[in-house]
Length: 419
Image (cartoon, rainbow, N blue to C red; front, side, top):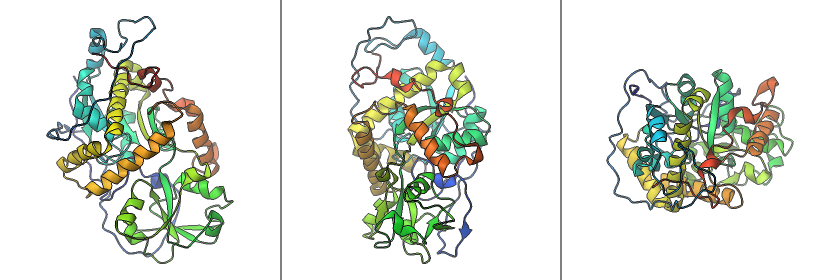
């Protein structure tokens, strides 16, 4: 079994989502004097030394397991997982042969998609039941890509599908999404109250950004015929505190995650207006779990069963949201809480994600199942606002294991689980 490697990361001390900050996706902006907010930038992870074994004590908060009863009608092979039947010995041996599987989170152990489900699966022992040796490491999504590309980590949380695709190109890597949990972007545009009644009212204004305007927000503004640098300007703002950004002179507003910054402002009693890309039919995604093409090819059952256990953890988290966020917060505290995440913030974060996910899956496939046409629409829309440069949007199908997540569910949308 391969030696574990220690991941040493210093994360940005601000309540961002797992989902990686799409403001990291490039673009130029002009610095504007602002109120300074102390920030600890994420350090480059060091996977050259031994990773810590997860010593977090089990929380006393219980989450009911999701029901997983079903029967299959297809003939079973020696490696097939059959509901309520013993896990095949051959498959167990194949999974054990994968060695230690390192998972890197997208933002600490925050209570959000593609992180909280992995935490709950680990807490419940689901990986162990499928003969997987999984080590969870807190990280930051934009720091993860080179480590998965090089095989130093096997799975990671990405902020969006477009972020994964962009990073695959930047790292000259074959990265493959194996589950996409959010079927819309989590970005929003937060404005000072009364500054704009419509998107068109933002013509001639200046928007503050942390590094760059998220492509989903840029695409939303494009629906009103507004282009960055032509119809509105962007300037850099310091730090990540929305309570500071809302007071800054010279900007009309700033982007933020709708499962984070609005909650911070609401709890402080600070008024604001909110524009959300999904309200303007802008496609997007969030909470992507991905691996490398090499690991998928070398250990297909381990990849499938990692997704199987993770989706069962997600079902638990959806069934008991408050208990799930409490478990995530315990992991955060056991890790020293370097980002000062709060119980109120994590409860708001996961409650927001639950509402969004239940709405997105009400008339569609179960959580995590990949819909290639939606992902292609995302790439195309973001290409139109310059995310992929002159090359344009690549085929989404090149970056997904399209049928993998669908195969772990039965016809009722329940995870197929052995006895």
